[in-house]
Length: 123
Image 1 (cartoon, rainbow, N blue to C red):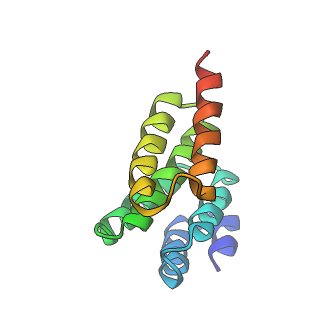
Image 2: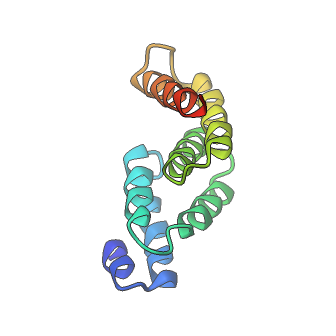
């Protein structure tokens, strides 16, 4: 339903379905990733920022949700070539993930790759 309403440019409905989709498995980073990727293909991709803000407010004490949303908002900013905002969000995500995962965890390795990508873009 989320993807269908996105394709039909029904912004309010797509937002409602994005939140519903997320609420089904809020700790799953794949859900946030899917939503961000789907928003990137529509003309109103900035709605993903509204979605992320709403999720962060709805789950303020869930560190994994916070980390996932910061990471994927950072990746959204990478796609939009906003290196400053991307770097800030990735750093916030990293700080939260460090409280959850060991340094060798695949998520921490991914963060290191994103940081390297951001560093190469800044040169």
